[in-house]
Amino acid sequence: MSEKVLMKGNEAIAEAAIRAGCRHYFGYPITPQTELAAYMAKRMPKIGGCFLQAESEIAAINMVYGVASTGLRVMTSSSSPGVSLKQEGISYIAGADLPALIVNVQRGGPGLGGIQPSQSDYFQATKGGGHGDYHLIVLAPASVQEMADLTAKCFELADKYRMPSMLLADGTMGQMMEPVLLPEESDVTVEKPWALTGTKMQRGHNIVNSLYLKPEELEKTNFDRFERYKQVEENEVMYEEFMMDDAEVCVVAFGIAARVSKNAVVEARKQGIKAGLLRPITLWPFPSAAVKQAAEHCKGFVSVELSMGQMIEDIKLASDCKCPVELCNRAGGMIPSPEQVLESIKNIAGGKA
Amino acid sequence: MTSRILIAGFGGQGILFAGKVLAYKGLVEGKQLSWLPSYGPEMRGGTANCNVIISDEPVGSPIVDTPDVLIVMNLPSLDKYEKAAEKGSKIFVDSTLISRKVERDDVDVYYIPATKMAQDAGIPTLANMIILGKVIKETGVVSFEGMEDALKKVVSARKANLIDVNLKAIKAGYDYE
Image 1 (cartoon, rainbow over the protein chains, first blue to last red):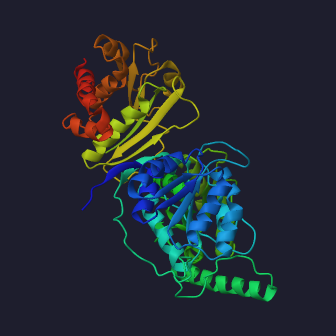
Image 2: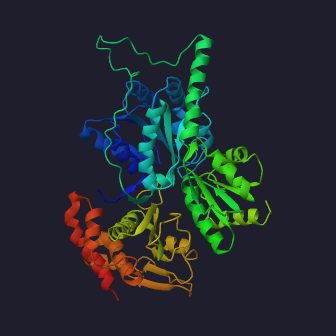
Image 3: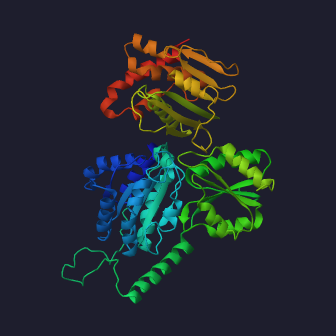
């Protein structure tokens, strides 16, 4: 039985990835995720792994593409502007049906933006980001413990469905320290008959590719891929409900926004307002059924976001706009206060929204 | 009980380290906790602060907007956070570096000449540990007993020889009247 240790979120991701069997990391430094790369630089050479600081984010994601095609667990990490640079490679990895992990410790944007925490890459992460029809499995940790646990989960799901996954965190999650119980070393070996491992003259060639010049063939790859996406949507949705049983106001928030919102919900309850929190853990697939169910018994929703309002669109879609959805947000690296969230809860409770 | 602690000063004073010592002591005592640093492009000489929450309950937001324990080690930090402190909170001031008094009268204030004490004791870089000792004494957020176990976790093995002197500094603050 191992004991709890105190770690930064960024370090917890790195250690959890190693324990999940990841031995290849490619990246390029950027605040606020640098501790992750630094941890890998220190640890990988000691365990026979590969840490490589690439010449750019674009190079790094294409190295990930290369290793992923051999079937080995591989990852890269960056923060918002760097993840934008990786989008072409991510689209290729999705198009070639390869598992890989991309970590985005978000900071304020657009452009070079700032270095303080943000959630404004929600659209980019959940709606595509690169070109073409594809999805990433997107997990949103709300504690250092989840930074570790969901890293392992990202690898597992990516392998299971042969698609890239993204851990979508933010600057606070990356920088903060909390006690964490690190996951055990995983010795899971996933069969990957498609991997480029050399034929040893005993099988035909495997081909990893995202180029299909015949539209009929390309269409089929899209249709097949979306069949798999359907399975992900049916089987892998994760969320946490807090005081939702009798809730009249449903606060929806993920990551750091969920932590702040929890304080606001507790305070609202103290004041006699029946508030609850629905925290999506998978952002794609979005917990639409849970939102829809909440819409049946709630007066309305509060979407708490560190952005100008992105997840709010998914809440409106999932609830068929049956009740009002108020946006409670800060942007550019600022974080909403519990008081601000409480104010929005009161607006919905009082029918003011 | 939940303690929401804000530590602020210049970069280089060991603000983040002081927070870490508290956090590790909380960990050793089996408490729930979070430690959140300010992070920015600034290095030594800039401002630094860190938020530490130590609680018997799971920690919600790790952000400390209204501290009930405020530790300030330079004037800009006192100017910035004095108003933010909760009514009835405890404010710890390094009186070597901050000559003015706290203006509020609804808080408990402790003035410790931590920087001078550190210089006099020949440990000029450990004013942070001296003030931390006083914080532990007056707030009981963590106990003084077993401090060495926490220090062993914070101080890397390479610098293990520094544990004793850190402990000495914490003790000096703890005993300061």
